[in-house]
Length: 77
Image (tube, rainbow, N blue to C red; front, top):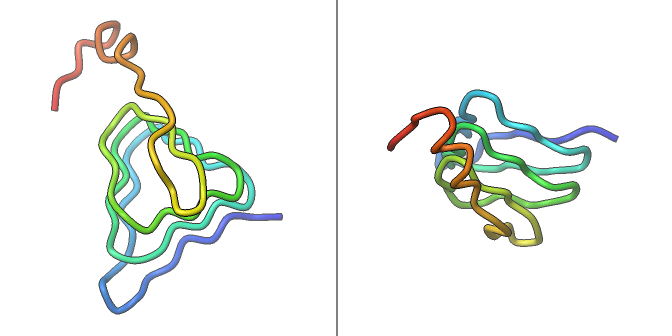
């Protein structure tokens, strides 16, 4: 089972660097997913999300944020 990443009339998704997309996840439309995100299995992403978060559910929502990663890598947005 693979993931679906597809465009609609609103554009195509932009996926950040070092993101993990679990099997069955669907990413549609002109959304932006930040760097170092994790998208859970069977999640339906139809809106944009910031960096360093875990995204789950139908429709997708933020499950957790990884502040420790920001501190370790010295990243700011």
